[in-house]
Image 1 (tube, one colour):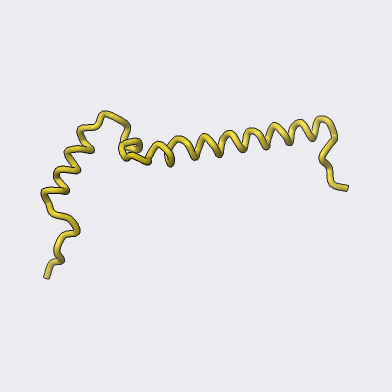
Image 2: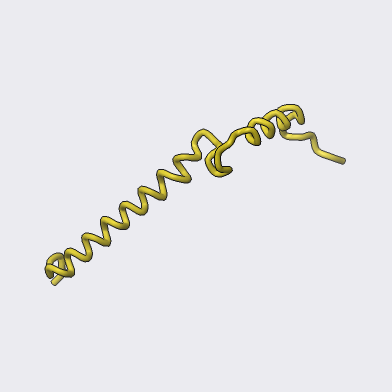
Amino acid sequence: MSEPPFAPREKLIEKQKYFQSIHKHTYLKGPLDKITSVAIPLALAATSMALIARGIYNMSHGVGKKE
């Protein structure tokens, strides 16, 4: 016995043609993919750079130490 498909074959083929016709990188084809592929990594990188800079400043000036 075979299960019925989740979506009709015609709709699947239509979506495949749509995504294959877009001339962007594969990981940026969806409408919200820019958030997960670009914005979140940039935010993490910026935060980590700020924390590293703060740590270097604290070490070089001898401040921010716990007793």
